[in-house]
Amino acid sequence: MIRCIQQTAALSLLLLIALLLNAARVQVIEATSLDTNPANRRPVIARYAEPRGDILVGGRPVTGSKDTGQQLRYERTYTEGPLYAPVTGYASQTYGTSLIENTEDSFLSGTHPLLTPIPFWNDISRSRRPGGKVVTTIRPSMQRVAYDGLGGRRGAVAAVEPTTGRILALVSSPSYDPGLLSGTGRRVTDAWTRLNAVPHQPMLNRALRQSYPPGSAFKIVTAAAALDAGVVSDVDAPTGTPDPYVLPGTATRLPNEARNCGNASLTYAIQWSCNTVMAHLGVKTGLTAMVDTVGRFGFNDRRLRIPSGVAESHFDTRMSVDQLALSSIGQFNTTATPLQMAMVAAAVANSGDLQRPYLVERVTTSDGDTVSQHTPESYHQAMNPATAQQLQRLMVKVVEDGTGKNAAIKGATVGGKTGTAQHGIGNAERPYAWFVSWARADDAGQPAVAVAVVIEDGDGHRADVSGGGSAAPIARAVMEAALRD
Image (cartoon, rainbow, N blue to C red):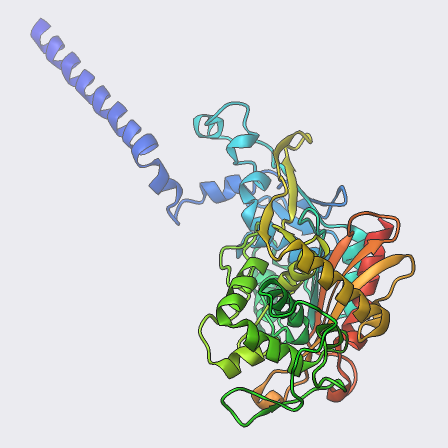
């Protein structure tokens, strides 16, 4: 009898050990695979069981959470959604996340280790802290005037603080309301289908994810390369450029919109946007030096994050001499995002020191305690300080007595450069209108802002579209807002 009891006890012990081992296998070894199994809805239910942390602009939340009373309890809401969509992105129970909602998701959803009182607390307790807050660098007044200035036209605005890299405005037009995508069901899927089907692509972030031929706005980069390489030593001296200028190795004459560009100086060429002079200087500078310079401005960098990914701004590293001539005036295969061109203006304004652009100032707990703070850092020394000073003077001349007069601001020093970029087969499409600029208050020692504006569908007839006419007034309004703040 005693022996039977002993055998039963041993068997029970073995079964208990097997049960504990199986529980450990399920809870420890297979926990990750079970958590990520599409059939397991518990992580999804837990994700939306609590309100999501907010994204702040100017100290105020531009996001929120709505209690739906459904199994996926809290849906994301947006204040002035179309205005801030290029900044926030969307947080959808159906389609996931984008932009800041994506890159800062672990903070916003409360799962990041920095939000926990002790390391691995979430893993141990199988719980999550209240979502943290993401504080952006955007200034509401600048965002608003940029958005209103575009007025629904296809285009974008990017504004950067030159001395720090803070992104002060980031607008893409036309825009959309990310709140339409927050929940689940037919309403959300219909909105997704509709937004992705319309030709004007409201969900495309044109400020970060769309690159355009920069046209004459790129001439600032070519001028920097020529000055740094010693091809130009005196900006007011004749450059020896013939007019007409024939693209090397071809019979193609490069046209000018401006007059008197033959043998013009670099100052005159920037002031009135002479294609021939800048193409000639790009060829004289050479491909190697041009590629080096564009790289220091941020072109050809596929890894730029703000923290969202930014589309690569492109400059060919291999091309013929005639192609180099066209690339030097922002045509051929040269493309740039609006953020990239704002970085070009910022480098000039900040004595050649290009600061790495960023959009998130800091992250806090739900109670406001800072857990992560961004520190400004230099991205590249884009050009020699002496070169930057000369380009500052040239860009000021564009605004004071050149193609950029519409950007002038009383009580401030403003530098700018217009651009009208041809595109389409045989350049048949309406040109893109560009304006890049920077502004410094007359009583200030540092520049307040650098701005890039691009408009895809400028007002008026094709021949009348210009950066100075279409884009410069928007840039001026954004700079005025920066100077007021």
